[in-house]
Amino acid sequence: MNTNPPATLGFHHITMVSTDAPRTLAFYRDLLGLDLVKKTVNFDDPGAYHLYFGRNGGRPGTILTFFEWPRSPRGRWGVGGVHHLALGVPSPEAQLKWKRRLMDDGVSVSGPIDRGYFRSLYFADPDGQILEIATKGPGYAIDEPADALGRELLIPPAERLPGGRDEAAIAAAIHPEPVPVVTEDMRLDGIHHITGITDDLERAHEFYEAALGLRLVKKTLNQDDGRTEHWFWARYDGGDVGAHSALTLFGWPASSYVTRPGAGQTHHIAFRAPDDDAQAAWREHLLDLGVEVTPVLDRSYFRSIYFRAPDGILLEIATDGPGFDVDEPADELGSALKLPGWLEERRPAIESALTPLG
Ligand SMILES: [Fe+2]
Ligand SMILES: [Fe+2]
Image (cartoon, rainbow, N blue to C red; front, side):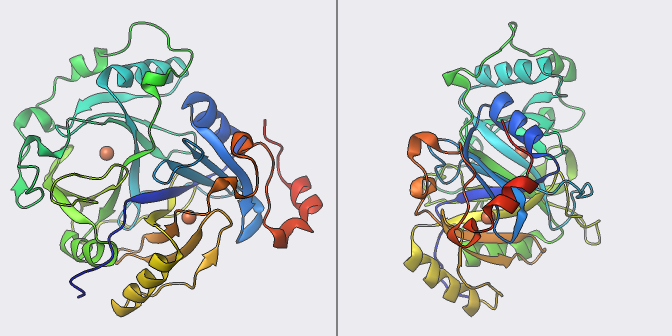
């Protein structure tokens, strides 16, 4: 394999499946406080909404997107799929505010659980996509040197494994007052990590290192199932772990059930390429590795290539530019239904088939 693969800066976006765009908008914009940065349709299926949420105008690494497929059956996580998406929060105090805000809205929440490297709060979106809100710190250097992460299997202490946690204290931890608005201190800062499931961690390691330049930053056990391993990769230069770059995989036994795509599941994960030239070189690199990859596709706000990991999960490499302000002013992002030029002539039919969004 190539010894000097291109290395991604981290995630560009994650795309999930919704059955109800108004409900998804209410959950991610109104409850979680993300900005709707683009309202468009799925370019490969123009009868379906494609909604983009993000921060700061849709900065790469903060972007969550949804295809609306009202008739999609519910999916199921498993090998070759994503188990959950974690969004970052600055502090444990802000995390407790989220617990209060979500529970007051009728969302079932568990945690915060001390994972060592961060603290985790779990819940699901209305379609069943498992979400986590994870604290920024303390980070991956708590149990091995910052310049030598991911070298050996680390066994978590007993208090972080099932049976060792103080479940009553976890359940009782909550912000004492209602949290009717999302305050600046609790603003969610995009993708903290994405956790998927594989039945071959070694093969996944070879692939993510060679194809995307990700580096192992932690090898440990699944803290909810001490019989299986949990590995973490990220943009890592031997010193810092890049924000919005941690991909983690649970290593399930061979012949575990495989994921079923559908509502409440992740459709694909996109990683960043800085520009078109880097993406073109990356495409050649993937072909050299024997990875089947699509031609470059113009997604208006970025350009994309798609390929699959050995477990089957669909991956994308998307360019940072041109960005979401290419077809509407930066201060009006998400306000109008935007269509690419080649769909404009079909606008009346497309608009009349979509449910209006507030
Ligand atoms: Fe997680
Ligand atoms: Fe995508």
